[in-house]
Image (cartoon, rainbow, N blue to C red; front, side, top):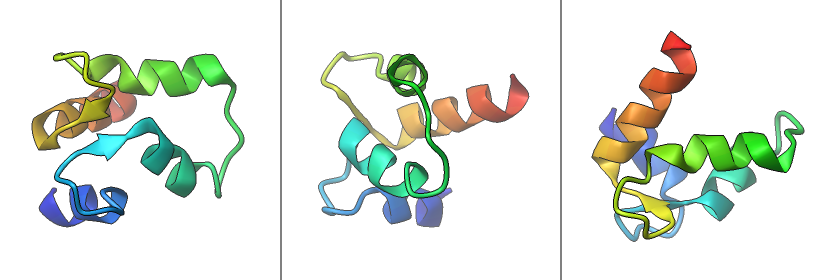
Length: 65
């Protein structure tokens, strides 16, 4: 999980912003804005970034449906 998190944390801040997610995933697939917002729904502290725990939860939600 750490390597995956670091690959999204492009600026090395220790958190992943929606912009960083869009930079990576958006190169592969075009998604409507509401889907991007749903990906960020695991941002429990509301700071508009995901820490490694929130990122892991987001991936779990995506793959577990």
